Length: 151
Image (cartoon, rainbow, N blue to C red; front, side, top):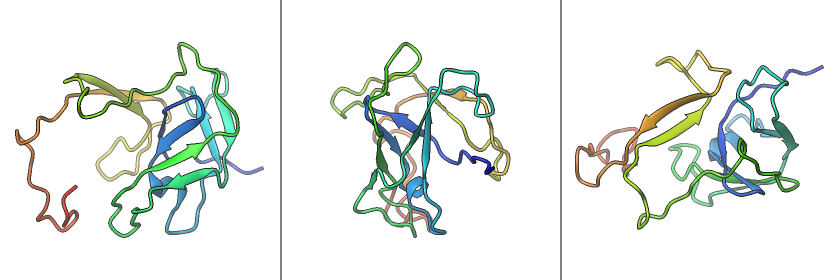
């Protein structure tokens, strides 16, 4: 029996699509995304109302994605069937630049809980963030070795 490793987070954006990072579906080592779980709060628990989907080869990666610099690191996963939306499972808000509210916004996900990225949370975590106002307190990232072309 194989163990499932939950490595990435995504956002449900409709009843049929999940948005995630391209590096989650196309890795340098050839590891492939094969399963999506929606509606879960604790990754170690199967007692919640979560749903799992097999999604191998059901994704589209941004055509400009670069594994070397991680530019355009975005992908869409098409689920095999529509999700039954409810008060716990619903699409994330996707705003355009024109209708973007100032926030604060609640973000949620799993991931590294230490600066080295070695400790991973299995319980859903959340934080509050605010919108950056263009030109105000934004660092110039264009001359950094990690982001030579900006963010």
